[in-house]
Image (cartoon, rainbow, N blue to C red; front, side, top):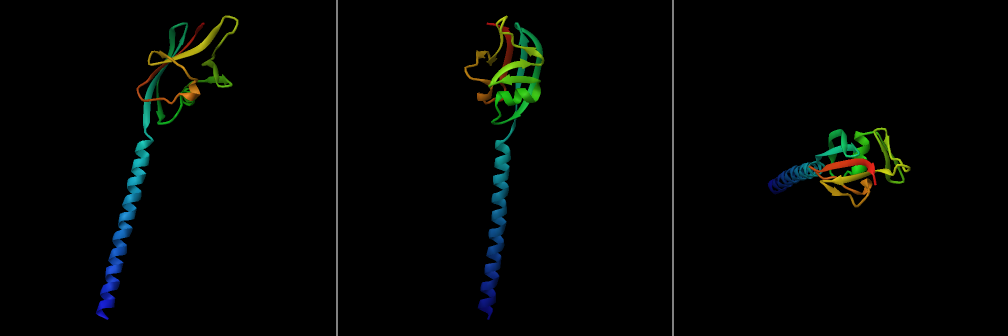
Length: 130
């Protein structure tokens, strides 16, 4: 009888230890997940003919693209993935003025929806004649 009680006691202790370990694993996984989705910061500058008219530090989550962040921060119109207007300043085909942008001084080679923002980047959108 003592052996049965002792065995039952050992099993209960073992289950208690295992359940305690599983909750720690879940907490660790949750903290790793929340740390992988961090708030990042970048700067977006808006220009017309090379002259600044807006300069905004923006926060975003890892994985967000430039177009999403731009639309959260400014009034943006786009057509088929191309930005046509920002803050009421429209492209003008007759004057050959279009929105172009650089990232850290380098001309963009992809559309804003295809660019995943990174922390510390400086993006300059310029409405200028091509």
